[in-house]
Image (cartoon, rainbow, N blue to C red):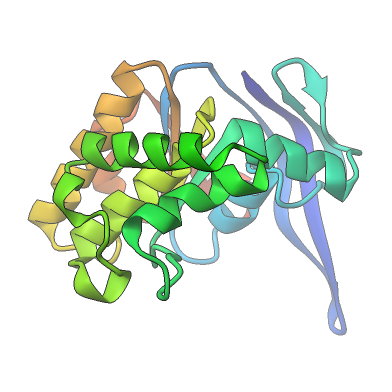
Length: 221
C-alpha cells in the first residue's frame, strides 16, 4: 500500500517558491489499477516522482508498505526503485545500441543477477509481451508498440510489486494503445499494482482508483 499524508512539494525559483503539490493525502491500495489524471502543469509528473521514489516531499509523509520513506537517503530510495517499482515511459527510454533482450536484461544486471538467469528471464518476459521473435532486434528495428512492449518487459525484470507508467500510450496510435492497456490489465490480474499517469481522461474507464489533479491539488474529478 502507498499512502501520502499532507504532502507538499515546493521548488525554490528566482521568482520565489512554487508549490507543485499542495496538501496531498491519498491511498493507493495493493493490487489496484490507479490512474493519476490531470492537464499539463497539474503536478502529475511531480506526484509520479514522489510515488516512484525518485524524489522526496518538502513536507508530509509517504509510506510504502508500512515504511515511511519521506526521509530516506538516495541510496535507500534507489534500492526500493530497483526491487519494488518498475517504470514505463512515454518515450520508451530504451538503449538504442542494445537488442530487445539486452534492454530487458539490464535492470537485472544492476541487481547482481547471474548472466544465465538474466537471459532466461528476459526471454520469458519478451515472450509474455508477444515479442519472442524480436529478441535480437534493436529499438530502431521495432515499431512504437513493439518498443513499448519491450519497455513493459524491462519494467518486470526484477519482479516489482508496482508498475508506474508515465503516459505509456501517448506516442501510440489508438489501436496499439488499446493493446498496451490490455497488457497492463493482464499484469493487474496477475497481482501487480498498476499506476498510470496520464492527461487522457478516457483512462478513467480502466481504473479502479482515479486520482485527479489540477494546479497541484486533488480535485473531485
